[in-house]
Image 1 (cartoon, rainbow, N blue to C red):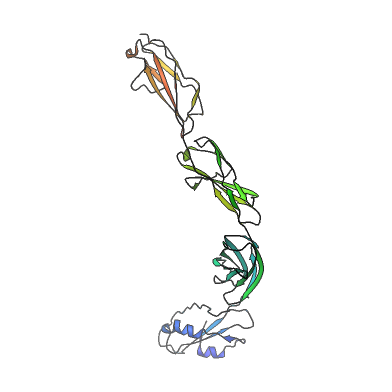
Image 2 (cartoon, rainbow, N blue to C red):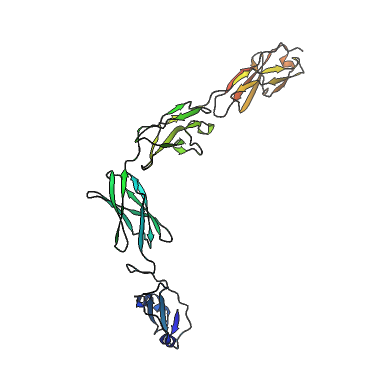
Length: 353
């Protein structure tokens, strides 16, 4: 707030302690203000009210009025109205390896750190994040070499105070002594099933993630999986995550298996021709019944075993060129991601003419 020198002399303030803000304001704002401008600052001692800065200006400034703003950053070890506290530290049980812990309190900063230690071991944290209200923070520690058992715990603040907290217990991470194994038919349309593997200590629950060439397959999170055409030719694996209360979860991945084309469709009912076998008449193909269901079909008409050029539809009108020949059709059933199946019609009698 700005006051003239005269009005500042008449102001009254409750008892306060001066901060080292005037020098900062002089350095920041001095070049922008008229000569003779003076700064003074006060901060609360007994009440949590905002600090104020008083700027004195000459009664008759030489120049035009100037808009002034300032940003002041507290550099003291302990400053500001908020009480500094350290609350909880958790979790209380940690696995050996890289872990995340959470600290609660007030006025936390990213320079605060967690220390876990014994007489012969010590690990200190690095900050992952601090909440906007500075009442919680997440820190990372590498406990790969930590001894199993209890560790002392403390939080060391940015202002140099160390808060002792309840110790933590380090337990062994789950470890696979035998990796998961995939069984079943690794072909398009086939069903595969994963074993959980063998773990020490044993897991209580297991989660599964199937992968193609190392990339997670969306929605493929059961122990069994029906292989789609989209993974044809790729390496199929499954990653199993073992969980156990009080332990760091462990993961293990099966050996990769290349996905091959699926089985060819087979005609459970052969294709047949209907119609009058005579020049000028049209024959119609019934393509039969197939399993598994094809995704498309292709046809080729033959006269005495020789392909008729262009005759690739489901019907065919006989011409003089076919007089006296016997007609057959080859039906090819295609299935996406699978091999193709073939079936033939029985030959007709000789084409009359």
